[in-house]
Image (cartoon, rainbow, N blue to C red):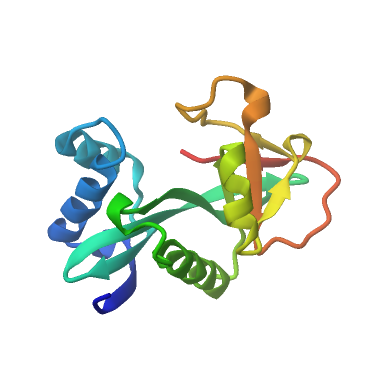
Length: 177
């Protein structure tokens, strides 16, 4: 394996080349075109969002988007990271790169002293649990402005959080967009 670089960059500091490499990697997973990926990136990624990249030989081969967003806990506004778009290039899976990127993501989340929230399919829960992510029961959260394209039945939403140890009595209200 060649030298692996991990970098974390706010969206406002990304170069055009880095954005293009990110969109090309995303395009290898979804059926959109690279121009569509670029348009989505420009529309949805805010300047303070964190882009974590795993780079080998100048190519982005792993990527996570930590979207800095707001949530409400018992009527108190807090800032958190919506954990979005976790990718490792398909030909490089099963080589420990996903684990490397997850450890890096967790380190970044902790360095900002925030918690992070993600939604995932049931089959991915065990992967995130290995990295100390906790299942957040559906009765404990509500997403106000987001419904993933893969979600067909609301009960299939599996919420998870990281670096969140507070006891709450009411739902956490998450804003994602």
